[in-house]
Image 1: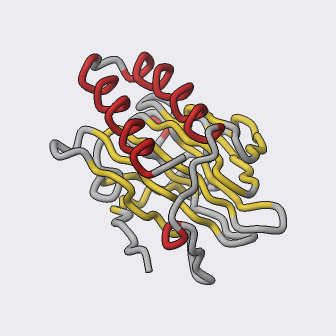
Image 2: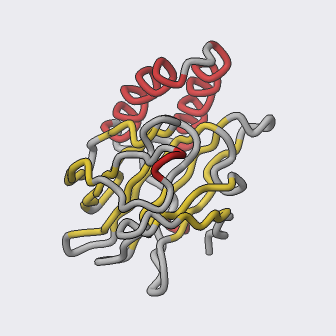
Length: 187
């Protein structure tokens, strides 16, 4: 799939985001579009596939001028794991390559602060699969790159995910630490 087809995907997502404020409708409309992008044979440029030996990397592919949504390539080296975290926005994730194990938790309520997180299941995502990873009421998880190659995901988020203040949780205690992930620069 040529780069101009990625631009067509971006244009399509922009229309979806502009046409609704309903995060459930937005994610349900973006998911099949992301699935089609992955199935089309689109090739990310090599600089957006580079893993790090230290931590997962989040490369910006597109940030809407009004920051209403963003598109990213997220790369985990073999065995890397994210902390348990939330997004505070909607998101759709498609696996470009590799395998990802997602460990989900029930999003704690304000009254549950300081209590252990409640596990909500695990799922293994493989190349070509697409999932709604988050909505504002269901967005707490950890991700592990499994398999024998780095895992690369194409992520679409509401807002500029690199600048959003987001929670990281200690699943055993429920303690919350707020962070801003930032963006990584492709080589």
